[in-house]
Image 1 (cartoon, one colour):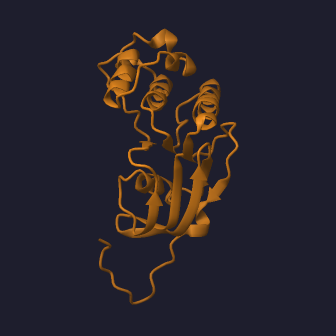
Image 2: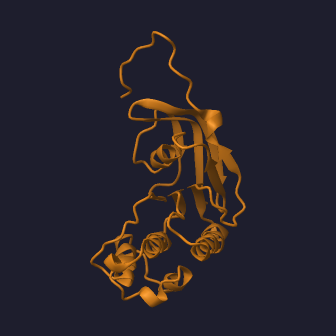
Image 3: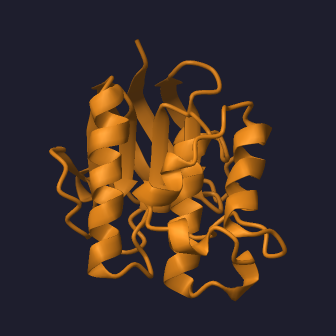
Length: 206
C-alpha cells in the first residue's frame, strides 16, 4: 500500500533554512493541504519531497518512483496537439493511453488543437491532465489551480477526489482554493526555522 512518511524534516532555499522539525504521514487515499504566508517554504518543501532539492535534515519515506511534482510550469510541448501531449506523457511513463482523461478535464473539443494556441486556462488544464496519464500515486501540487476558472477548478477537484484519492492515491497540495476534498491543513508557520544565533558561522549549508 502506497504511503508517504516525513520525519523531522528541515528544508532551505539558497542556503537559508526555512522550515525545521516537520513530520507527517499519509496513507493511501490521504491528502494534506499546506498553508502559510508567501515565502514560508511551501514550494521548497514540495520540491524536497519530490527529490528536486536535498533536505537539510530528516527523513522522507515513500515507494521508489511513486511521486510526481507539478509546479507553475504546465509541462507541455507547444508544437504537439492536446492529445499528442497526453499520449507522449503516457508513453514516457509506460502507461496505457486512456482517452477518458480528455473528458475529465474538459479537453474533448481541444484534442486536435496545437498546445501553442491554447489559452492560459486551457494550457493549465492540459498540464493537470498530464498527471492523470502518468500513473504516479503520490502527487505534489504547487498551486495547481492557477489560471483556472471556477468550472475548471471544480473539474480538477472532482478528478482529484474521485479518480485519484478515492482510488488510493495521495496528494500534498499548496493551495488557497477550496477543491472539495477532505484533507487536514498544515500551517507551516509553526515550523518556521529559528534565526541563527548571534555569532554563528555564516558558512553556507552544503
